[in-house]
Length: 242
Image (cartoon, rainbow, N blue to C red; front, side, top):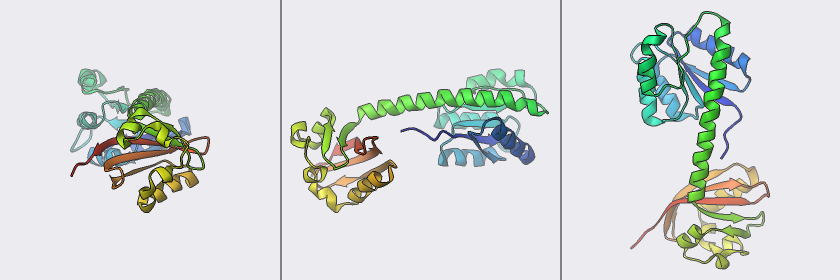
């Protein structure tokens, strides 16, 4: 549920030299910054949709699509991602419009290296707040999912009421039993290998599909626990009828 300690920054500027300078300067300001650059807003939207991004830093004036236009499009996809509009001139002119569009900050673009220290501060502040909100939302999602936990030997150690309802079994029927004894048909599916792989790699995974045994279509998020066991968060499970 936690993201990498690195901060992924997407820098958008139609001047490739300035974009590269921004990437280099930000990396010097903070080694956690992983800056990816692009020279146009269309590519920026594609990158934003494809990768986890903690902050967008964008020039105001660009061909085809301006920084403000990109901001508006990004806000239709994500209301919270920090978006810093790095304006070369006319900062006061765009302030009201940028704020209305949901900009996080709109510092003046300068000529010297001194401009990158305050920019780095703004990125850290924005990305920090964004991650707090993201973790809060993930926690809410986690709490609202059905939950099953197993120990390193696959013995079921925790079952919540939502899991009882989904699988139509009382917790007492599952607790203390081996997961694969409770759900024997799962051994014959891809999820068996996927779950065991999480136990080996300590890397979370998500498995979707229809379960013939439980008659459920579900999205199962599997997380490794510090104890060596696993937690299963079962989301959007729908009982299918004939």
